[in-house]
Length: 195
Image: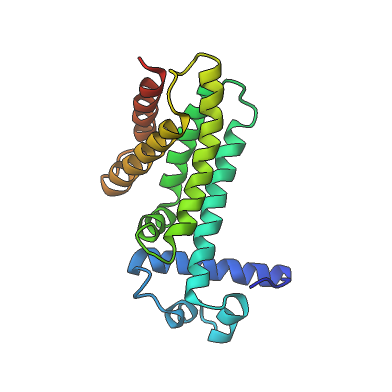
């Protein structure tokens, strides 16, 4: 639902998104109701429906904004870096930092990928991240810095390693994100550099 919002309207919409993110991560998507969200914020259902047509639309918007934020942070982190291998390393580290800083959103990603309604949009966002990584890998391959391999497969491998390491070691076991990032960088770079 596209509406022109005042500054106050943008703030209220942001409150709904942020509170819903917390509730969905804590209680799960299906058990969390619109009533619980509006009651938690102390507003009426009319406020919710002014900004979102449904709980599904709200959840999809949370996922969309989270993916855009992750991509924006990655791009900002590498924008002044010329070396392709360094861009890959910084991208991995930035992804780990984001996963650590956004545990609730990461939890929602893990849930959404298995849901028929949300998985396609989540996969489209992942495909965009992979296409970004492919460009860096192609540059590194062209420079002779990375072994000659399918950059698409390498990008998906890097993505899979990052997701799994963040899930298990940052979120489940509480390992310091910098330590997990060091391992992910070492593992991924040694693999793609062919050392």
